[in-house]
Structures are given as C-alpha cells and as structure tokens.
Length: 342
Length: 223
Image (cartoon, rainbow over all chains, first blue to last red; front, side):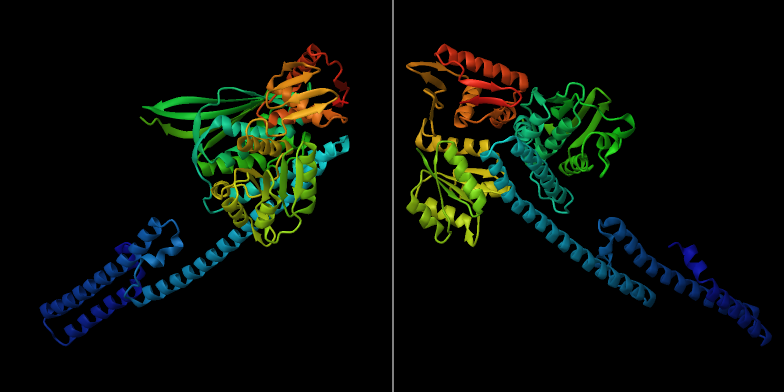
C-alpha cells in the first residue's frame, strides 16, 4: 500500500480537516489574531496531522507487507495467519481475525479431505489385494482344466487383472503421499519383469519382443517402472499391425553424455503397429483420451498412457512418444541424469 | 516324491493349488482349519510349506516366525500385497521365498522347484518324469529311452516337461510360449516351431518317434 493510495482512501476526513483548519484560521483572523500567530497554529496542526498520518500509514503498511510477504513465501497460503502477528489497530484486527477463522476452516476442510482420500486409497489397496485371491483361484481352475473355452476365460482374466492393476496404480499415482521408492535398478530386470507380466497378452497378440542392450542402470521405483513398461507393451499388443496379424516390439536402452561425468539414460520401446494419427499424437497422454485408434481397434479407457505420464512425472522420469501411421509407435523414457561415481 | 503343505484360507484356491501341485509331481496336503496353525504345520512335517500370509484370525507373520523358530522347513510365502516392504518383511521372518498373487502357475512352480533344489540339493524337485517309456531328467537336462540318452537344451527340456506333465491332453502353442516366457525366454512363434522340431530330432536319435504329436490349429500332444 503506497502512501498515495493511503491518502486517497482518507480524502474525505483530510478534506474535512483542511476545511476545518481553514475555517479556524478565518475565525482567528476575524478575532484579530496576528497573521503570523494564525500561520503558526495552522502549521503546527497541519504538521501534527501529517505526522500522525505517516505514522499510522507506516504501521498499517508493515502489517499488510508482512501478510503479502508471507503469502508469497508460503506453499500453502492458507497458513498465512500462522506466520503473521495480530496487528495493533482495530480494522487490521478485524481483518486478521476474519482471515484466521477462514484459514482455520480451510485447514479443517483440507485435513478432512486428506483423511477421506487416504481412507479411500487404503480401501482401494485392500480391495485390490482381496480381488487377487478370487482371480488367482479362477486362474488355477483355468489351468487345471485346460480347454478352448477356458483359454478365453483366461484371456478375460488377463483383462480383469489389467484393469485391477490400473486401479491400483491410479490410486497410488494420484495420491498426495509419496509412497514409492527410487533406487538403482537394472533396466533389463525391469523390462523382463514387465514382459513376464504381460506374457499372455503379448503372446496372444503374436507380438514378440526383441531385446537390445539393457544392462544400464537407472534410478526408479522398480514396480512402478515395470507397470509403466507394461502399459506400453499392452498398447503394442492392442494396436498391432493388421497386415499379417503379428508384430514385434524392440526394446533397448541408450546412454548420452550430458556433461562432465554425467549421463542421461533413455529406454526406448518401439513397436511396428498401426501407429497413431498425427492429429492424436499430442493428446495420447491425456486422461480419458481414446482417439481414433481407441475407437477403431480395441476397448480403450484412455487410462494407460495417462497413468504412464503421471507415474513418470512423480518419479522424475520424462516420457515422450513418436509415431507414424502404418509404421509404428516409439515410446521413450528419459531417466534423470546420473553422475558417475568415482 | 516331495510333500508340500498348502496353508491357504480360500477353499477353492487351496483345492486348485493342490491339484496343480499334484499334477506337477508333488504330493500336496492342505490345512483346513487355522487353529494353532504353526503347530499343525510342524506336526504335518512337510518338505515345503506354501504359506498365505493373510489367514483368517491368524497373523501369518507370527505363524511364519513360529515355524521358523522350531524347524528349518522351507517356507514359500504367497501374498497379495506386493510392495517392497512386505517382501523384505517376509524374508526377514525367515521365509525362503516370496510369490505375489495372483501368480502365474508356472512362476509359482518355478519358485517351489528352486527352493526345493536349494534346500535338498539338485534333483530334489520332482526331477524325473516318465511317460511311455521315455524318462526325462529335469535336473540334468537329459532324456533317455531304453538305455540310450541325449542331452536337451533348456527350451527343449521345458517344452518336453510341460507336454509330459500334461500327457494325454493337447497343450496349446500359446501355453508353451507362456511357459518359456516365464523363465525369460521370450521366444516367438517361429522359434517355438524350430525348438519343437529340434526336440523331435533329438528324440528320434534315441529311437523315440512320434512322441510329440502336432494337433493342427490346437497345439502339441504327448499321448
């Protein structure tokens, strides 16, 4: 709050004071007081008023400044009244108390929302763990009684399992808690884990993996990363080329020097499927985006790549995608730089 | 034959597990009540325990620790919680291995076989399969018939073992591929065909003809 604004806000009382002062000067002159004395009295009064005004302005300004600074400094601005003292002037106190009440109400709301969100998440986790027992039982029934009919049940079970897994990672990936563990992992181990996980889907789609150099290590949560790779693999199976009904997905890792003893590693997963129309490429990571392929080829919920982006973002992994219709799709995961330890 | 004890509260899962294990050359028993589970396990004295951690009214971790305190029987823990903490915790309880649900049957069998091998030495895990005069030694990777024997590659061994264990029923190509993928051999269709023809050639060399039959459009069969 500049002094100008402050004065402008008090224009009416100031004008009234000025009028009163002028009137008093007039009266004093009428009563025959010496002009010098009148001038002196007026000057004293005016100076005193201006001084009072400046002091009051400084006082208020310091309070409002502290509020503004605190708001800038805080990640959660609703905590501002925790950081600023109650001011020593009535309007400020009214304002402060209102702000304080408001922010307390806000904090309660947020705490309640957090709690219910955490509870919901715990429920999802429990539900996911419980559903796995009947799925495992159904799976064994299928395996113990092989027949063509059971094979299709098996394939449906794969889909169910896939959706259950997505639900679990949706609740984990969108959670406010940071509950993943970044550690050093060998890309090949994670890739092979994902391939084993999605084996039935890939074999059923006749999509064969071609593994390149994968001995590089990166920093990531192995389970999350395996899920991410799995989603990309499922897409390679879903959107395989229609021409000969089979396909391949090449997977390899690359390392680029980014500076003195610093390296960036990237994992490339390239399929030779139908590719993505150019008009859709920019939106495939959007939540719920199904696009032309989603409508044409497979049941698509538009969740797979959205989860890929979200989980990667949380792990600090960059993800991008290139695609050409009729040629294939290439998904790249860019891992944070690693500094070579001496 | 190795005796396995299944400790799992879900009845259907338990029954199917036993069927699966029996079909793969093990003797399988199961607990049906979970009172004093640890004592029951110790009384049964199996060669390996397949333990579900989420039992009704019983703390699976406690059971695991109790059994381990009094016996060195190998324990494979099966759990539906798949996070690193649980994995670590399980192994710190003295379990020998950890398989997350819902498991692939081949993965589960592979874990069981590995633990048995580790605990009782090579050849402990249902090592020999015999069918129609052909004997398959899974520990040594050898197949023998009337005194002559031949060495198999890992893939050939896995394919033949799967077919012999399911003797009498057709095993789809997809199933065989899955089996191979479960042990990190990500073979495609063509490679599988090549593997099978090599396997047949190897069998022919020891005088076994027509052992592995093709059912067009369905898969392979050992009758």
